[in-house]
Image (cartoon, rainbow, N blue to C red; front, side):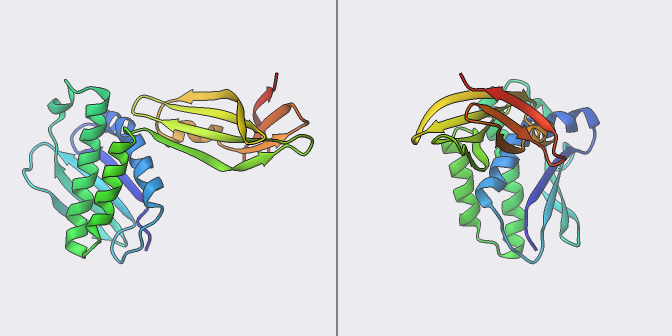
Length: 213
């Protein structure tokens, strides 16, 4: 099975769960963008339950690849942290959780250590291009969506390249960092002509349009 999902929640507070999920979204998305996939025999989704009453991690359940792990968590530690420090905090929770289950099942932990170092070296900023470049049939131009996700927000830009040089960056949207907020702006880029661009969603609707100057 393919390990490709992590969810984090608080066991005591739905409000805290919402905060944790929002503030850790960029780390989780970056984690799996770097992993791409990890085939194993035990885990397809890791559910991390933050618990302020336990001292040591423990697997609460494991069924059909859905693993629930309880992990010690102190909400008050977050209060005085900067955005970078919070990003580091959530990365450590995720990394410790993955290492805990990985040790039990003989995973290549050095692989996940490399992922952690890469996230830190990229300053917790998840930057990636969505889909393939769309080439203008009339001119030597192409366009692609560039995503920049941080603990605070996700910014989506339409990046225009001409003769292999970036000539324009058009803001498409700025949303909350979670996937359910920014995914609605991800679609196929269509050139109406050499200067008119549209982003089309899976339903065939135009969700964004722009005219190049």
